[in-house]
Image 1 (cartoon, rainbow, N blue to C red):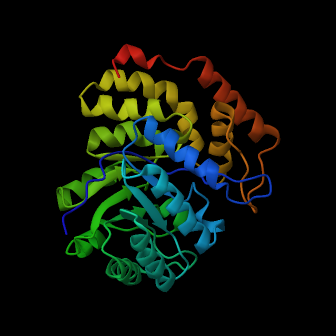
Image 2: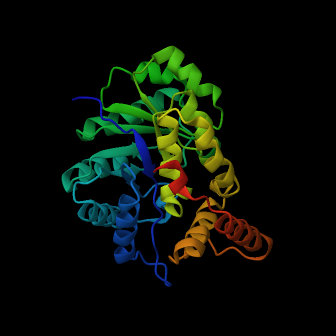
Length: 304
């Protein structure tokens, strides 16, 4: 199996909900179409931003099918594997391949804080369950498990481990990983407000959050960096930063869904236990979003 190419902007889309917290599949399809029309390079469903922790297995498969149907081969659709057990993760990986997903984004098993040996075994078991290439999602801040450079070296013999979603929040890890492993893995930045720095340091893709509200701006930053037009990318990025900060913290799903709602008119509904923002939190997200819309850059000046 050849190492898959996960370059570009890959939105980790939100899961659109109806007022009674059911998945709105028509809205999911509309969202996928919106992102593809804006020029993104792939779609990731049922990630942390997609409320994986509150979705049932059958819902995850149905969401992936809806995304695949809408994408119609224009860009790859990846399903996130974020299950409580390795057994369930492997079964979901096999099902994802059967329905036509083109890749997986895989987290360590949830809830239990596994040691290094257990984490590597978890990933190898899921890799064995399907032929799909995998993005290894490393987010020790949120999930308490750090997939170290040493672990990545140990896992390097499995070609299905194609890429790393680098969400440690420490850009030094990018240099350390490249120094230890060269180009064995594609590195994908997973922290919105470190994205430009990470792309400059060598990440070849951006698994993005605020892209769901501002896909053209996100794609513009990525393409300008790839073209070596760093100062122009920085102009857009500095405008974007107050919004990109919404991707950080325990209420990032509510934050980003509210931004989407204010920008695009989509549903801000999240599934409980997440509740709508109120008070100062609501006011902050609203104020920052309205300011961003007032000062939104003209992308035409960049020839994109």
